[in-house]
Length: 423
Image (cartoon, rainbow, N blue to C red; front, side, top):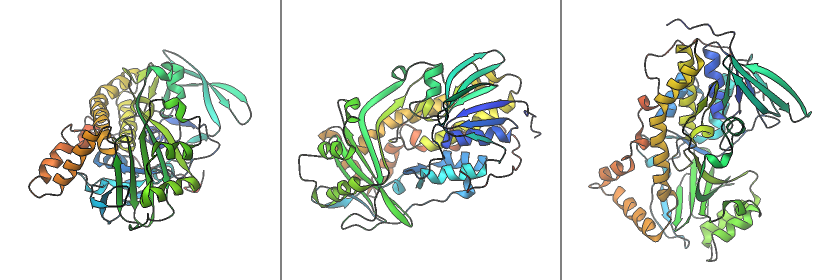
């Protein structure tokens, strides 16, 4: 199919994460001129555990970056343990239906970034300060935080891909409080230097207690990542104290034991620590005029759903397709994009709420139910029923079509690639 020429169209993309880079890549494929602005002074590297399900791999394939990524799943054993170190057969991500690819967030970002053509402009230390639009375009005042200077430019489209606490969402749709739905849990993620005591580096290890849990995610040929989750009645207060101090208090007062204790000791000296509240974004609309939100800025499904990266890439890919199909009407393209995508995202958000009980049980009843389900998953007679429970909301087994193009795709010509070493 012949690609429509959009070379006179400029799009501002706010955020250089997975959703932002994927959006820029797709818009450049259809002939737009994307400009990416990023708050940080340089591209952020690293990141922690993510899972790439079938819908995410399909989107990555359509974007032309799947071959630059690799499944880092380890071939170890999955264990459920208690504080004393007693263990029973567990359930890791490699055991989930569809065998999701396990990787680091930076693996996906690097693959997408390297695929960007060198003519895609990236401005670091830059944030939007004001967004005003009319029927013909969007005027955005951009502030360079390094020089404290501002300039106003006009774009045909603005894409907010700037995460859970999106600046674009605040400027165009309203304050965060109107859209963030707190789940009452905190998440702490960091990388271990090596395996936990008594376990192989390839093993998956889970310690689950009422209102708190530890998950250890293994990778092939690299150290594992730890995810600690715990309940809180006051999210704001969690950010007023040192992370390690607050986490030790949340997992006390009982002795930590050898395995959890080693993880808490590793937290004290970890180089990079992700510490944040677990929240979903709930919005009646993801676009307003010529401004649209993509990824966590629009629909954050939470880490418990395990579909953030997959949904972000699929949403970015579909956005480009709809803009190409409706080249003379941006607002119509955005409306059709949202109508197609919203049902699937709704299922993912529902699954995020449901899977919270598997990641961190809220009560002793949920903990007991989790243990029953894990035992059932290991029995030949009931394992198929357990798989059905895991997928009963459909969100955990989203087929490629759920987040894919709603019809025949558009031609995607090869583009020159950005030097992967450039940041």
